[in-house]
Image 1: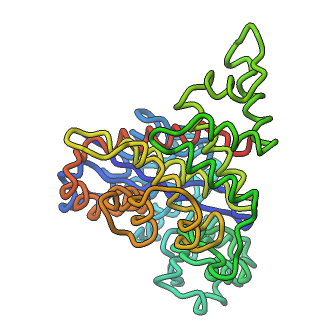
Image 2: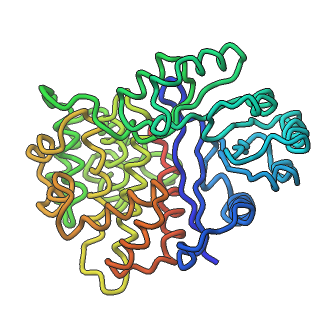
Length: 404
């Protein structure tokens, strides 16, 4: 059976990754009939830890996973490492005596306990006593309504996590209120949309990214671009002369380095270095999501009957968050860089022949399984390939050190 697992980042107050919530779906053929919660979580745990490998899904970060009442009573979390697993107690778990005792045992074994989709009721006091974190859905319970709750829980030593934070304004308000953790796609939105000019160094990086991701990029033009940037030149020479390439004689020119590293290698290297240079103080996760999207789009285009260029799809995914990275409008950015009209159409208006690929990738990020079902049917993509392609994309992006 195909196991569909997506991940959503959870940030701390400095917008650094604290962990990932894992979203689960079994075979898409069984999408509409709901899967019973115990079976869903058991399969997720089994596949995450035993089959796929939790490090491939969450890297070195914590994995937040939902547990039903029955699985808590069975103390299933104790089968897995407390260094990797965060136990989320679903909102419909009843605070009965045996449940409380099971949660206390789990907590005593060093696991982080989270109460999911929390609404305060006096009956929940025993669960609050064992909880480390309480998650509040800021769409279901607006921030202006939870001020007193945040204050009371903070005084009791319980951290608050704001879930479904979609804007920077919501993030900043939740931060000021005392929330410690944040989940949502606010980080992938621009913070400033008007009056921003692109600096010359930024423009050079954008031009390098656009050039290297063309189907047939020009080595001469690329060489000139790299030579203009001392930092990129240095990093490229350091890479090509590293022990990884094990050369008998050192490479001494940019042209030699470009030829030696090869077309695929230079695309990856320059995309990574340029993106990191543009991101500045942005969360590392923003770059990582861009890389995941690039690889996922590329893999989605490699299917029977496809007439699209996979290199073009890679570029589409790579540039899909450039407005958030540079805090500018997509229209302004696309007007200033040499990138194909097909890609610009998708990024600016969400339309065009390539739009379905980005829509599918974004739906997978959200765990919007119904939208995935519709998109794959329309595009003629085999759904059973998606789990492998997504995991390959995660592994590829996580293997790149975005800070180097």
